[in-house]
Length: 496
Ligand SMILES: [Zn+2]
Image 1 (cartoon, rainbow, N blue to C red):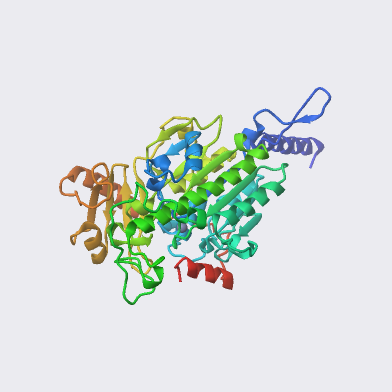
Image 2 (cartoon, rainbow, N blue to C red; image 1 turned 120 degrees about the vertical axis):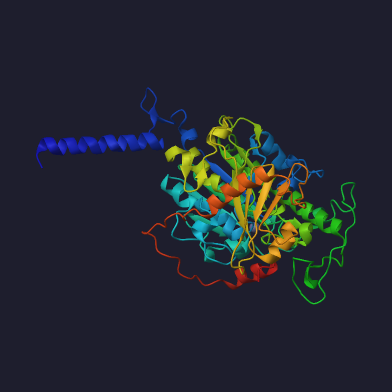
């Protein structure tokens, strides 16, 4: 190589390096004395990010969503200071599949994860890996054993704390309860370095069955003015566990069989998680992070509280009880506080966070998702007209698929049993009008042929899309042995 060519090559390397540094916001300004100073706006280019997720939290049981009980005063405050996406949809109402969609921004048809205990896809990039590559320290505290590292949900995390494996054995302290989660997450925040931005994921499992919040919360709502009408919960005679048609003998709590008792307990779990989240936010405030950081709050799916004869479980159907989840993004200076009612899918979360973290995205999309950053600023451009999801037990050969535009929900039913239970007739399509029937009980397909035809075309288009190509450079997940503690926790949650 001649000197001049070497010089040109060096120059282009240094230009490229400069461009990379500029893009990644790692350049630093210097004051007159030449001392390095934080560049104005540098924090905004790589903001700290907290992803708060609450298992099994129905949007309509949060006071911010209009619920009559004050279940979420802390999260309501968060919602008031950020953008509340009023109509967010999970992609499949089960923990493992839903989180795989959140982290890969792929649909179940892309990543193939449809049941608990199935390893998350290793041949797709996870959000935490992307964050890591952007220079973030990636940290997680999770309390649902369905998210154990045995199932590869730790991909991309520098530190992955599974509360049931490490929480101290203290009298009365549930190792998966919100108090233990906040204790461990707070310890992570205390030890965090400030030389790198952080991506911290904290997952609370409390509203998941069994509904057993600690003492001060246990009877908080029992018999209050908001208790619904007394409905008897059917109890199976022989099955220890059951969810369709009634609950199993082992799932009866305190010998009670009345629905308002169980709903009050479920709500109390939410209130308990909300109170513990305040401790975590206080620690972030104390360390001076809170007002410059991105805080996202959502849930992996909701819960059926007896609607459609489906009791205290999620996954079997694609009704809004299980698909409609809360979503809030707080980012002072960027997210203008407001309510955004257009449909959002949880696959939109990863591109949104990557966009905020300074990753260059083509057309503001990544995998299946669309960045919500323009919507955080109050622009509706690029909003989805329709959100898609699937549901159904993994033993079935085909899944229920759902499309919703925010007012109507269309369910595509393949199995005769599903048709009977959802459409109340042997027909493949059930259309519900949420504006007059939020409980999705009356099939109005015949009365709305144009809506049916429109949503059907979109849903069939979605169903026939080819899966995203897998990353060929990545190996398949090998089997990781499941630890006995994880197995025990899965049993407690009713998965085994
Ligand atoms: Zn879950």
